[in-house]
Length: 192
Figure 1 (cartoon, rainbow, N blue to C red):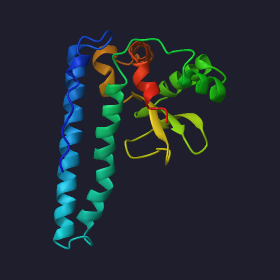
Figure 2: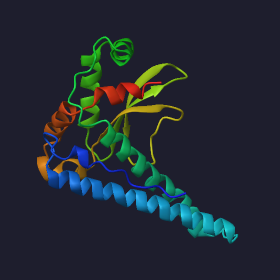
Figure 3: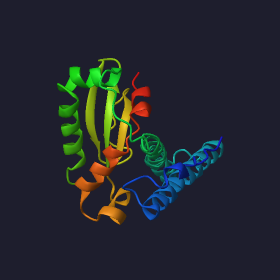
Figure 4: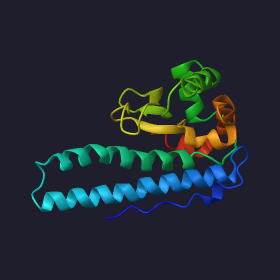
């Protein structure tokens, strides 16, 4: 089964994100989908051919997580945008943020600070269903630093491709535009 890139063209025209930036970002995402399919096909063929003890198999196994997570994180990111609606302060997510961070403002301060850290990667608000807790986390690379068993609730891309075209080195301005466009209904629907 091959994965198909989803169409996120409905995000075009989103305030704070130029058409050039978004189209470049969509192209990058499509590359992750293509490479996920290529890696999956190559791994299946190597297994079929009995070539699992070669360095190429091991390296491709390692690379698969990068490509697959690059695909999924971009999907989560695009899907939690173009809302521009306010977080329901009486909703389940706001209540969890109050319990786990001391309030929506405290959570947002922590999330923004995580996004402003030096480096490339992602910021994720995770829900740990087993412990019923929310955590803001830094994902350094697509395949590194995910919380095992946790559900990504809100994803923000902080690789340079997500903001340099429009904001150059002003990551804080990008984060502001990101928050102005969060689809809080989509985010809350991910809370398990």
